[in-house]
Image (cartoon, rainbow, N blue to C red; front, side, top):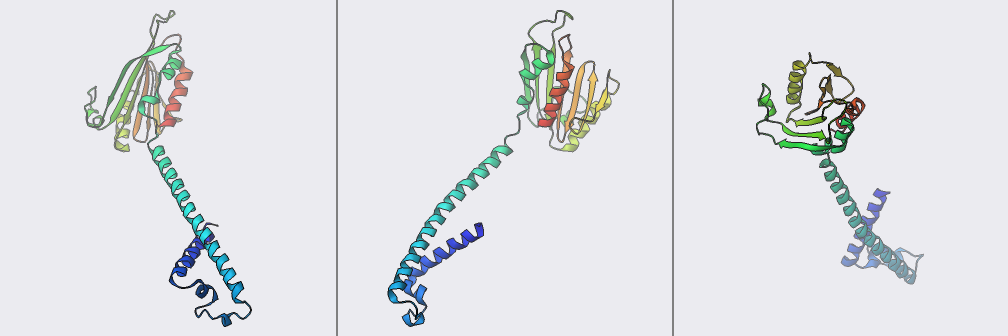
Length: 243
């Protein structure tokens, strides 16, 4: 249908241009314009058909112009949609929210820390990965429960950290370093259902996940009787899926 429509537009434009160069009778009756070239059609009928054909060509050309405008609008809309989508990935600060923290802690909480670092800035903590981590952009935040847990006497705290590296190889290098450093931690185990690779620790409650060039960590510094391991796992998987 699209090819046929374009062809009609082209034909209409050609007819209208030719009508300005020569007479419409020349277009319709033949190059010579001699009525004898079409003995079965009289001049009156010929001119009537000419006017009808010219009107039709004009209507088609008008429709073509309107269609082109509509197509441009749609194209622009699609292009804009693509731009929005390309810029629409979830910001690091929205990956782990107050609501997520409260689900893990099992009670109401508040923000106690929120920092970010752009590529090229020195990392907050210095270790043998600092040179590699300097090239990463990072975001960190922490939430604390509003009240002390009566059973344990502790106040729950959960931290979230996000890192994005310029190369996947850099993220792999950092992930491998911290995995090796924590293999003897209590409850350490590798996870095979989250991101590209991940590991878990039970004391403190901890998960470390790499997906492509990104790494995130969730750590519950002080577990209480209200802390939910199920919510911890669900939220970790949700974040991994959203990276």
